Amino acid sequence: MNGMERNLSEHFRRMSNHYLPHSPLYSRLAKNVADDPELIAIAADAKSSPVSNLFFAAAHSLLLEGKPHSLADFYPSVSNAPPDKGNPFPHFRDFCLEHEERIQTLISTRRVQTNEVKRCACLLPAFGMASRMSGKPLALVEVGASAGLNLLFDRYRYEYGDGNILGNEDSPVEIHCETRGEKVPPFPENMPKASSRIGLDLEPLDVRNPDDARWLEALIWPEEYARRAPMLRRAIEVARKNPPKILRGDALESLPKVLSTIPENAAPCVFHTFTVNQFSEEMRERLTRILVDSSRNRPVYRVSIEWIESESPLLRLAVFDGGNEEEKILAACDDHGGWIEWRESGD
Image (cartoon, rainbow, N blue to C red; front, top):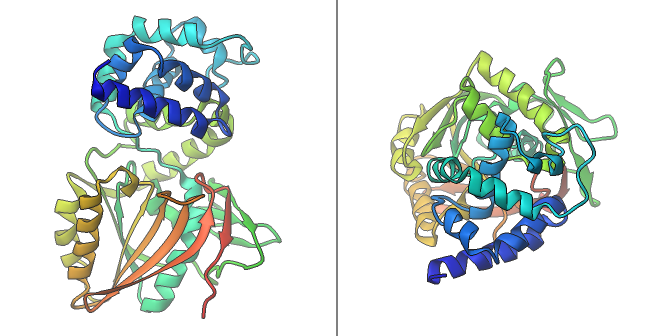
């Protein structure tokens, strides 16, 4: 292996531990891929990160497409039978080598664009805070929008336990989120109003395109497929009725112009979930500078869920006003929106 491939091997080895709580299958595969030069060489064609997620999603996509192979017996997402208890790696290796060209095409043209609508349950209290602080409807701008399903947060129904139900009661998308800890999130009495919704993505996914819809499903880990895929499909159906506007291109190039076109009677609210973890440090700083510059004439709000150097993903709300930034950590949350633990004191 060359230097890049050795780094990639170490990446798969690290990700093996990351997968273990939710996907023992991917954990086992990652551990073995790390020691397989041929598969590492294939994975080296990936153009976005995390590479292991992209690599496994490519294989998963082909299985969901209906490619026949013994590997399917290990994937609860494509097999009705109980998952095979044997060693999946020889089957996975054979499948990847058999479909090497298709996998290389997928990992060199696709990106990790998980569109987890359950994260909206964690975003909602922060959107409510931004709406109350501004006193205006939110002009939503999502960085790394994928298919834009989270832009449609107000078209879903939310249940937080204890009879706390918010959102569209008639929505086919019902999101359940557990509240943890002693503090109760400041749920909005009324759903925050969105005056506009724009997504920014290098390569947006079109919910009307069957291949793009299947890719969204392929990004779901096999053991979680039965739980998460039905909600994803329902959210896609909601989006197909009125697809959000998503601009193709570099978000950092597009964002200043998009912010400049938001009317004064709306509050600019930029948000992102599990996006800047794929940014370089320079790109993260550039995003912050754009928001600082845009706030010199009026406040700009930033809502984010990211998992960078913390024990769990963190929900943050930043207010940019007059060229200054004030940021609060509001809550810890589950990476798939299954729970939220409020931390902000409200003082």
